[in-house]
Length: 234
Image 1 (cartoon, rainbow, N blue to C red):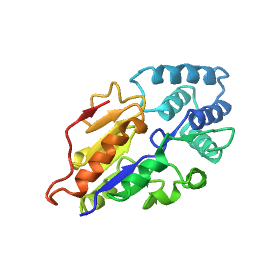
Image 2: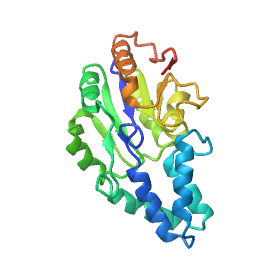
Image 3: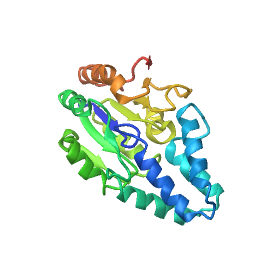
Image 4: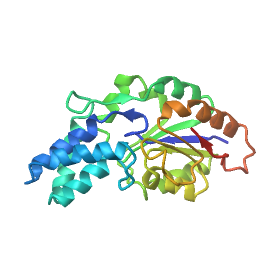
């Protein structure tokens, strides 16, 4: 039996507003509304303070851009342009504190998978720069969450317990919850989300002890168990 931990990228192992602001600047260029960027900045601040209308920062930017008349094709092009800037001075981003140490501690107990909707370009060089590329057993890009996460979770559950970690319940965690896997919610929505997740905290770093405990316990569980755990609040 091999437990699996599935990590999201943006807002989970990678933190900082740089990538979202890069997206905001790109959509603002495509809009006829010169005040769009300012409205986005205000809405992003509200989201970080607990505004529940949006899934994450990208949803804030995309929603306001759509309201400003930026069509889907232009929003997609803006997103692609922002991803090309990932990790540069135009879109700075940092690993969550202690990421390398966490991955090292978990690898003796579980298979570690990075699963993101973002393209590989930009992310893989960052992982190499952060020294964590080899900390993952598998990297999956352009997954197509939420639907695309379902087969990945099913495959992992066939081998053992699964813990899905992410900052968007609907995209990163709901497919895992539906299949009986454990879940960890991080980010701005963790404080007020009503989702019945296994554990939650503002950042992944705050959950390190709980995740390590989950992995060690899951590795020694009866194979009939799905690895579900008592909810933990941080």
